Image 1 (cartoon, helix red, strand yellow):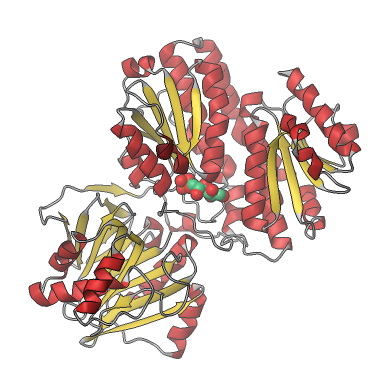
Image 2 (cartoon, helix red, strand yellow; image 1 turned 90 degrees about the vertical axis):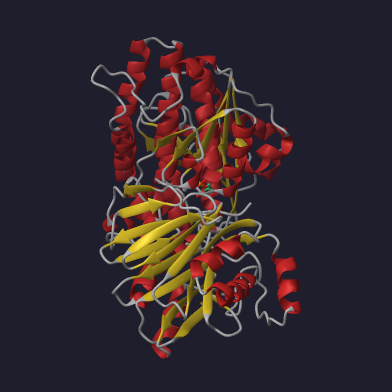
Length: 615
Ligand code: F6R
């Protein structure tokens, strides 16, 4: 949510910053802007709309060249997406420029104070107060980092701030509280960004910033302190993917590339986690076996697609470990006073590791004495850092706003955690766990096979482009898959889409069925739990009898459903609990193609941002 870039070094700052913003545009695309201290002053440009508008403006009116710069791509919170509300924001003298991600909760009080002191604020944003406060503090201290510390101590809320000042043109200063900011360290240059993708083309050497820290970037080094000015301990790390991973690589959209990368992402997430004897070794789970044996409840917290992964994980955890498991939307969790204790294991699932709702929920859980295990895709992000342990998914960078490969790897990570709990607690025999691991290690191949047969799904999607509504049905683990299929369609195709537990249909939603309404049904494996399978075959007949156009996702060899399917999408036979890994893939392809057919922006759906860092 908002992308931020800062640069100091020997290169043309504007080029570095604009290239960085391009990589961060997935975080927000309501407006974009840059500022460069140059020729004794500060040059800035900003435009409402996508980055391309700013690019055009810079061609029409180029900024003077400088080697220090900052940039921003916005997801609007305070104030409409206009030029005036676009970042950077400057003080009245135009000497300091600041960009911001997050929400400054006490901005109204600060704004009133500043207005009283004669400042003239030009935007509706919460951010602008920071530029004016920084200008005041810089006049008193002549030190931008110190000015930033003094200002941050007065702010409440969540913020990443990055600033430059015309009077100290070789410095970029950043600050963070509850919002992401990483440092990139190069040879004679340094970078600041919301995400390493912004500087990965220049350096893979990164520094994680902690809470309430201020960083000062100069060509010859990086200094990090707390808001109180004391030197801070930081963790350096090497980014284990390169620039090509954050590029489209010949695909029209990142989403298509990320869908295609799923077999590898799934395989990579299993890699190194199964030892030679076939047992699970999750060294990262730094919660002792003794403590895990004591766990009497698992609570999963997550949002959106990650929440759907959690819903599926519940089936696996309860089935394999017999520990009761609750799954809760992170945004609701702490407000209902949940019952937690030191024997509750909380699992926080997040691709970005920065989702504010999930972060706040995990903090609440830790305050109540529960241990938190994060399942996360982003090294150095806040959620794993604030958890007791983290299990990373190895999906690589996910750029498209709609989550695909991260979801599949979250499922794999959840299965691993469930099996690990079963192993530690002895609720499954070693050979039973080994059998599931063997099934898991075949699943990347199954996803590959699904991807090879997607042309009919794309063709079908194109024929439905003028429909208003699509419903999705599933039972057991197929129910969260239905929810995920509906979410993908809403966010990408902007269609009314809803997922239902197939058994619930007769309790109300069946009234929605009308002639030719497309209904996608996820059919469980006919081999295991045949009751489930039989029931859903009846559900398909019920809706078809009422005129629905049935789009049935069923395993190869499942002939019982064929007579009732207007369209049959085949997936490889997979054990029931693991089926969501393969069954979700056609739904991703379906939504992506429908979005394209409807002329929507696949990678950047309207109103959304990849990383949701506000509550
Ligand atoms: C949907 C989607 C979102 C995210 C949700 C949580 O395609 O991507 O629903 O799943 O915003 O994000 P993370 O996983 O980063 O916490």
